Length: 460
Image (tube, rainbow, N blue to C red):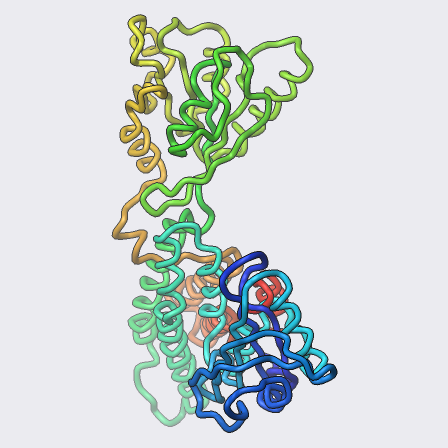
């Protein structure tokens, strides 16, 4: 079971640190209005204001009786608030100091500093949202592309939660019927045959399968894709990174070995968050510093989701090129035949070495081949806009619980299909219901809640 929401009053700055036009300080809890009455000077007392209204005034330091900041005070009275508690927001001037001064006044007047994610945690504990929706708030804040944000917003709106609730209700009904038939076997209750239960369980199994499949397919929206640009020195890796980033992110120079360390750049490719990593040229060398760069390049090759292997196709391949392709271990990669703008360009000389792989002809200096390169990346990601827009994006906790629920349901159905008795199947079905309950937060302990909300920013 979940805990009850605390009965104290919390306060925190809800906007990012640094210079800006506004700074929002929020306060939630039973003493919000009594504290606001003491520190706000305006046309009237906040406690006497109508809910969901905004009022101009000043935050006053009660100790010194001096103005701290000019603010707009927003009034939200329970239960129609984000936390379902009385909630006050002060919109003051941006910057590092004004918000901190307002927060200091609130804490000295009886509030305490909120923990990370505590406002959203109270929204969950007070029943305004379930745990899937609460986690979606964090995903929405951390979204790196429009598609990521839309996926998180769908989850925040409760679409997935409704599906999970339907699964739980259907399973609970089957379990209840099994228990009734066991308790009243002498009353002649009909339809105790396994096929009766299987007819109700198979649709749930299929729907849960589809949900898990969509979560696997769309996980790239949450985790993103890491792509390493690999190759010998001076094949054009840094120029390609600049082309992909649409800016001069990496130093480009004719001198060999300009890049000695990895350089990262994040790019949105049609809604998919991609991190491109430019690496040092991979070749045999006696230079100690360059060897360190080569070692980091090989590490990136191991860690990358997709290697982009760049060749200078204006020159014939050599042993360094062949050694690099030999390290790919049949991985799904893209071979880039760069420098197609040069007269000596000869991609056919790389045909044997790149046979069976995806090959893209590019000129990083002229911007040629960018669209083909992006298409090849999306093919490996298996990007389908319609599927990505409608699928569930899950974190590790959610994915693990979905898989455990599915495994329990499969065992229960297997027991029924083998004729081992409905009472045995009910054990696995209860496990499935429990896993789904933990998923949405209906059956969960304090330790899990603390872990979930500790990843939120303070003030949310």
